[in-house]
Length: 299
Image (cartoon, rainbow, N blue to C red):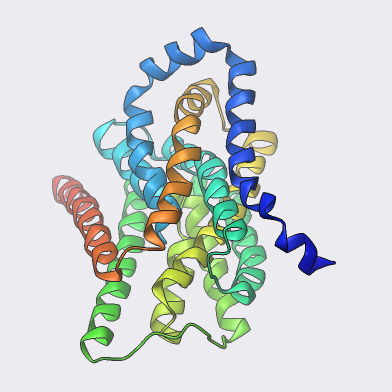
C-alpha cells in the first residue's frame, strides 16, 4: 500500500499546496491592501529574507544565518528580536524546503533526522527557557560568529579531502550518542541565535563521517525546520516574545521565504559542491568581519 501511495505523482504537489495555503491565509488575515502596505513598509526585511530563504533551503545554514547578522549589524535590531524572528521565519521557509526535499525525493540521511531532531528540539527549549535571557548582547553575537567559523572550518576540511581525492560517502553509519549530543548542543545555540542545530549536525556529518555534502545539507534542513516550528510555538504561546513588531516582519517576509527556500533546496541539490562552498564562505567572511569589528570597538 505504501508503495502505491508513493507512486502517486500528486505527492510532488504537496510543497506547492503548502505555499498556496500560506498565501491564502496571509491574504485572509490582512487583506490585499494591508498586505501590500506592510510589505512596502518592511521591504528591508523582505529583501533580507529573499537571500536568507534561498540560503536556508539550499545549505546547512538556516535563514537566520542571513537574517540575524543583517538585522543586528545593519538594521540595528536587538539580537533577542532577531533570534525570535529567525526561528519564526524558518518555521515557514525551511518547512517549505523540507517538504520539497521529502516529496521531491531529494536524498537525505533519514536515521540522522530521526535521532537529531528530538534532541535539537530539547536543546532549543532548554536554551529559550533557561539560558538565552542571561547572556549579554555581544556574547550572543559572538556565539553566532563562532558557529559560522565552525561551519567554515567544516567546508575547509571538505575542500582538503577533495584535494586528497577522498570521495564522500552517500551511505554512512553514525554513532547515535554522538549525533544526539551534537544535536542537543546545536539546539542550545538555536535557542540563542535562531540557528545552530543545522550547522552542528552538518559539521559532524562532514568531518566525522565524510558524508555527501548535498545529502548532509538536505538532512540538516529538515532538522532545523522541525526545531524552528517547535521553538516558535514556545516563543508564541509560552514566552510571548512574538510581539506586534515581529509579527509585522513575519507578514512581510513569509510570502518571500515560502518560495525562496524550496527554490534554494532545488537549485543547491543540483549545483557543483565547489560553487556552493564558495558562496557560503563569502557569506561567512562578511559576517565574521562585522563581528570582529564590533568586538574591536568594545575593546
